[in-house]
Image 1 (cartoon, rainbow, N blue to C red):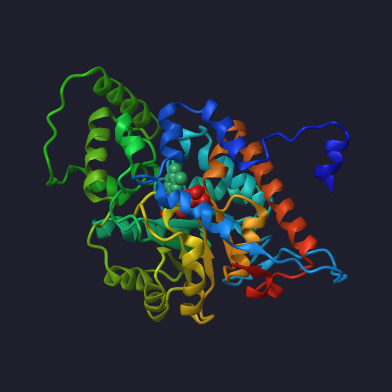
Image 2 (image 1 turned 180 degrees about the horizontal axis):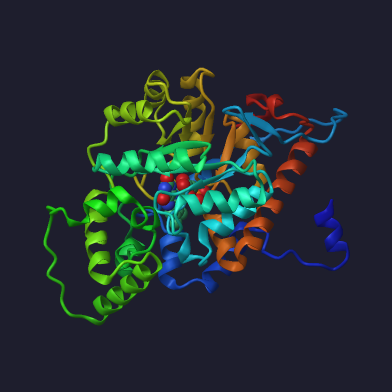
Length: 411
Ligand code: FNR
């Protein structure tokens, strides 16, 4: 109502409301490299496209005249209160959108009781992000998303840091054991990590820094002295300054990061070890197959996060929304299921909730909002999303989230 009334007073919203218009506006604001990194997907971007098509193929089926009270969006997950069935998905290198990056997004989310997930590739160290979130809301929920390094000392150290910082849980992403084939980035010769971006967790980590002097295996690079190389070195030195590291230290750090950040042979064995290594709620992110869900539940994870990484990993893979119902069935109600990939509107959220998700993750749209208006932008995006979600439920005659189920949709 407040949003409509502002329109009555002739006030325009601070951001475009339609997802395509938001993306278009951000494209004009961001550098071509930064925009390509965020907007791009794997291969032909067929999965990215399918993530949206899948939502179009599910129709909401509203009921009338139910005399329903205003919808209550609140829920409890892993014993903690969420203001709505919504969270900000883990997104790396947010400094590409705004220098305040995670700090700004986490504050906007915390203010609204919406959980924030800090990426393993964050631009600010986890501790600072949690501090920022709890600064605006002491009850703020911040999850840490982990990529399993080949260096077990770094994994252990990241987990300890998440525990000490007061994180609400650990999200182990298992669909990115290597970076997907991303033509937009490859064509631009752009990978932010090589410029020292998105490495805040590593450059502040005692275990990672202690290992910098150890020898590394892997291909030796014999760089040609080009202008691009010079620019990369300048960017690297600049990034190093933020963390008190010299250029040679940064060069070592980037090489070590590339050699160890992900684990191509990751298996259930590592999941078992992470499960044993931390008392925090553990979620597995990136599952699509029901048999993987069954195995995850048997192994004792606390939550399953259905996602195809926004179509950035396996091009041509199943959309997340289509994978959702079988994943829900496989979990047999033993653990909550979260989902993301293609969620753009409040109505999308209702579709995913009706198919059995407990909450949905917002990804690219919040990066665009961040690029356009920083913390205020992310706040406005969340306000718009929550308003549409609430209105959709009200118009459908749904008062409580528990009422949602397959009876509210047609496929
Ligand atoms: C991501 N995603 C991601 N996931 C993760 O677990 N760790 C990460 O560091 C990142 N980084 C990242 C960067 C960028 C630029 C994007 C777009 C995505 C995946 C993210 O959590 C989520 O699964 C997708 O963004 C969902 O797709 P949509 O809805 O954004 O299209």
